[in-house]
Structure formats: structure tokens, C-alpha cells
Image (tube, rainbow, N blue to C red; front, side, top):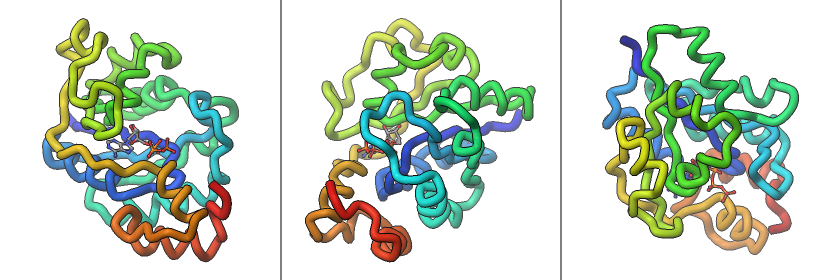
Length: 198
Ligand code: ATP
């Protein structure tokens, strides 16, 4: 049975914790393939995201070199809000016998009950959670994880205190982001004058 990981995000910009998550998921879950899916219209983010073209290009720079990783533009091409359940349904139709693993940072996993058709998400994929240093109650089990124990897994990667929010603010303030984003992504940001204001 093919094992496929699905990792969605704004990737505005992609950073070292995203890459660490991808590597941990590939190794720990023995994935045949991992689809990195930049979100189109993020219904759950209050800020306007950078244009799709830039986020896709940065995701390709950050992830495409990793073995077994495919950057998948389907949510950027879809009209209307990006719902993870739609993406999982599409994947299920493409690979009906595959097993799916949805990879989430703890903050997103805790918010899962607010997601569109979250019960179906739990049926379609095993939820694999990475501890996030800055999450409320980091590392502690949350309600859904307790009530739906068999549908959750924890990734063993150490928590990294890095966020895209912080990186955007650092770019705007002309502070170093050397340990937070990979060099090609940093060059892309500078070249396209992204994140000039926080
Ligand atoms: P922002 O600060 O703009 O909200 P972000 O850093 O959370 O962005 P996203 O692109 O929104 O990055 O995140 C994509 C996925 O990666 C989400 O599931 C998120 O929880 C996870 N993630 C991001 N940063 C980390 C981190 N430091 N540790 C664990 N998971 C993370």
C-alpha cells in the first residue's frame, strides 16, 4: 500500500521548521511520497497572503530538492477557499488504495475541529502532529487527540521556535534570518522585495 504524506501551509515564506517537519515525516512515517500543498485562499488566516506565484516559487526552492517530495499547486489553482478535505478527496480519487498522512504543526492540529468537514478529514488521513515550541500547552495531548486516539500520531522531531510571522517581521526590520530560512529562499525574498513591511 502506497504511503502518501500531505503537508499544507501558507509557506509565506517556507522556513527551516517546515523543512525539518518534512524530513521527520519522510523518515518516521516511511512515506513513499510527500505532497507539499501551498494553500490558495486561506480561510483561517486573517492577513492577506503573498501572491500564489511567489509562495509556490519559494516552496519549490525550499522543498523540491528533497527526495520523494512533490510541491503540488492544486490549491493555488482551485477557485474559492482552500479546504484540506477537498484536497484529500482529490488524492483519494487519484490513489484509492493509498494510506494518507496529514502532517500538521500542533497549533493547526489543535484547531482541527474548526476545519470544514473535519470528521471526514479524520477518516481520510492519519493526523501526524509535530510539537510546536510556541503553541499553547505545547506537547500536551488535546481533546480530539484523546477522543480519536487511533487517528493521531506524534512526530518525534524536536520543537523549533521558528515562525513565518517572525521571519516576515525580521525582513521588514532588516534583521538577520540566516538560521531561519534557506539561502535560496532569502535571495528570492530580497530579489522580489517581499515583506518590506511587517
Ligand atoms: P505564520 O507565522 O504566518 O502563521 P507558520 O510559520 O505557522 O506561518 P505555515 O505555513 O502557516 O507557517 O505552517 C504550515 C504548517 O507548518 C502548519 O501545520 C504549522 O503548524 C506547521 N509549522 C510551522 N512552523 C512550525 C514549527 N516551528 N514547528 C512545528 N510546526 C510548524
